[in-house]
Length: 447
Image 1 (cartoon, rainbow, N blue to C red):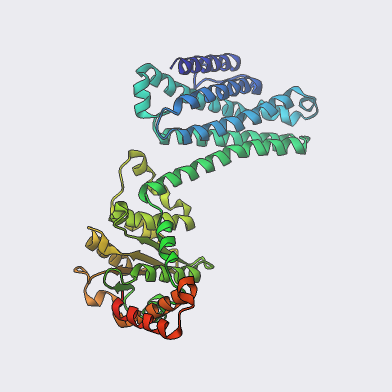
Image 2: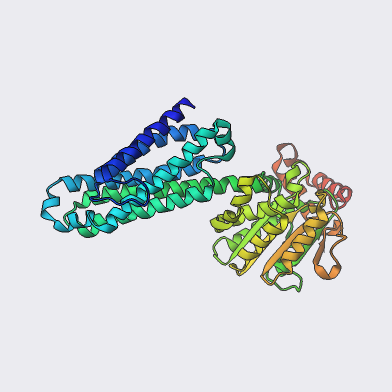
């Protein structure tokens, strides 16, 4: 708290100094002759203070991203004004009267005054929170509402761009290397802001989808025997995938242990292969698991789909930022509308949800998925379950059942593969292998 108080006092002195040197007594004051060096001094002071404030703000939840954005803009603005100060003091000031005219123009003075005003607003906000105490600062964050800080950052960015234009347009003798260096430094602010937005989006992604769907997918693929599931992939799945059926909701039903999850993973892989090289179609998926309670919730089922959708459309998650900052999960309907809004940007969207029966919210999940499948957009949905749905009627879906006869060839292929690859079984007599295969197929009963 002492370090923070020192930072405020240091910055207050800097503001007072620049006001004295420029003749500014407030935001409505005017200045006779704009002195870039004075503003540079202010920026140097504020940059130093920003480091102290940054350390302080680590105690404030969700403040780091905004601090980094502001720090980037201050750093870039400082670099630009330092160069202008050097140019004003050098021989170019004499050789190029346009440069001197630009720096002493009314618009330039106004820009300097605006920069001072923005920085003073931020300082005032800090001081108010300091007066109210450390606990108050922790509670509200820094500096004030996020919208206010973002507005300050945008203003600083615009002022920075204006100062660059003054140098480029009015000082034709500027060294190209110097200009290149300035451009590099000013780009750092943009890069920091982009990194900040990327970090925030990742946090939102993990918030709405607190599990890794790829882990579940890899687990299912690891037990898949190559060549199995052709009865489904070459039949009901292909008709559904190509849009040859009236219903866009494919419902794969089978008893527990019959291999639905593995078959669903195969269908996902087929859809991925078909859509990965196109910009107009996309495959999204999730697995409901009794081992992951979050995966069984409707809000996180939709969240998992949105998280993957954000890989194609990064801005997808931005609309959820206010809810994220309030730590209030959005409603399922909100996520549903986001999915639908982005589906219109695609020719086809394929959604896979495995084992909906494992969720206590099974019927709500199915009802929501049916809403997507029946929308005006080309959204195709596949679900797997152990039993027929109470919510869905026969007319709502394309039904595929896993029967013992359906899996018989798959079981035979799996057993044959084990007999040929396991060292302890590989050298058994052919008739023994046939007997083993026959017994296992009979006992398996489609499992």
